[in-house]
Image (cartoon, rainbow, N blue to C red; front, side):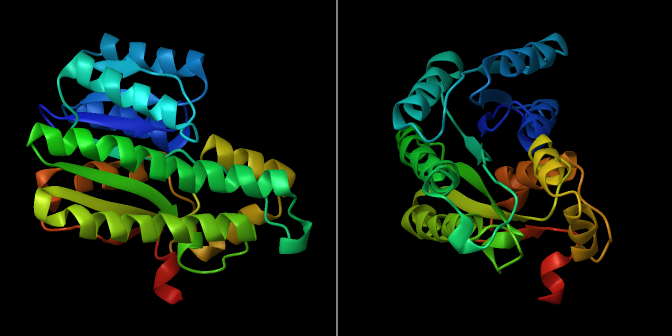
Length: 252
């Protein structure tokens, strides 16, 4: 499905990003992996290479434009081009009323979830345009990007913004061969989710009940959707916010 493609995946050291790295590589893509934690990132890249895949680890913070630029540059230097991106890095805390959210939490939430996607789009799209090959980008939003879900107000705002950026980018580049979509992700059993549940264990039942399947997603279920949107099988889909949420938004 992705044979011969080069894909950049952020937030790749764990959770959905790590699942995507393995799945994209299994589908034939060379993967450029970015996350802040260098050791698990390089271990994952080595795992993929040991299995016969092509992988490059580039540690960095998506909130830092220079880090994203370096990852994109390394992708082109190593593999010759960049065809796809899964901008998945995220940051969340347990939900609290808006007036209880401190400035530091607000700023980090917006920096990673919004500025991170902004930085990725600004550096990924020019190299896709320059190559003449077109491209496909998938940004990770959330059910919190479509409604107030009980997540923190900062996270709800950030994930709404991801969908807005996705639609704007799709409109800007749709006639130049670049598709841009978002995933509306429901509660997923990731390491970040485990941290949230550690802070507020009562939320596990709430998260599972929000899905009409009455469960949380496995990270690979989200990864498969991202890979499909990056493939030619989704060639007429752009500017979409695609639910991968066990039906959570179907009842809104």
